[in-house]
Image (cartoon, rainbow, N blue to C red; front, side, top):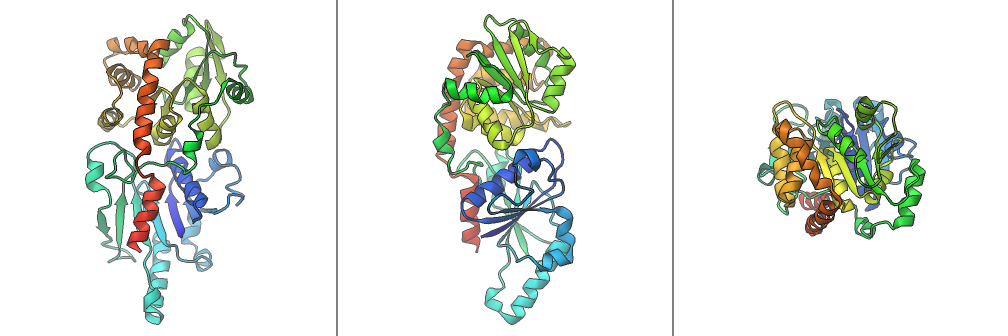
Length: 378
């Protein structure tokens, strides 16, 4: 099928990251995708070749082209329209194809099929997701008045739309051996000697300074691989230009493609991740992880984090560490939660992540669920 996926990049690039993974997964299954995005610059490093049309099955188009009549006349009507994360489709785009469908209905009524129109929502483990998944939403105004769209919710249960998980992922479950880890770390600029390896992808967590202090005082060497952007800025704000402090060695990473980021998570012993896309990749990596959820002023993220932790059934010490990392515990209680990062605690934590991963792998993935839903609709 032919899919139109629309994405507006708001901040922190999670929206374009998720949208691109979905596009690539659909293309890998033989579908054709047009990704309409208002700022595709991150794809230069996130998915090399995408902007040069070197990604089979996916074409990246500028958002403004969706309002250009000449461009639209050259493009066939897609089978599926997806609004990623609630972005509204441009009215000229909708109007063009509504007119096209009306003309087709006059000349060949049996071929006048409306696209399946989906609003792909944010990921959450909260109960409302099951209630709202697959609910129809009639279009009440605009050129498509009388048509209908459907809310499609990713989620962690069989009553939701599932999770992004490419078909080949299970083949990557075997963790990399020491030689593979050393090779990958060397490409990142780290001369790894078998020490504990931790990745850091975060915003500005209140517990960061305490974490760095604890790692520096560790009885054994630790390497911290810090991702480019806000994580690097946060660490440098505390340590300046230092790349070594006590037992802690810091390696500042360049911008990573999505496959390289996934490999980073697989090679590290512990992963600090942030946002919707990377927490899911941390689960698939099967290593202990701490999630820095996107903070919201009304504290809506607190309930979202609690629902996620309950869904994965992580033990209390891990739960409290997550709350502390997100500033959701009293300041006096935060530092003591770092005990969950001791070697034995990490060893006990690992089976919990693997059990959660195995359970989630029993569900249909998001791409399969989308394809099946669209086929049934059509």
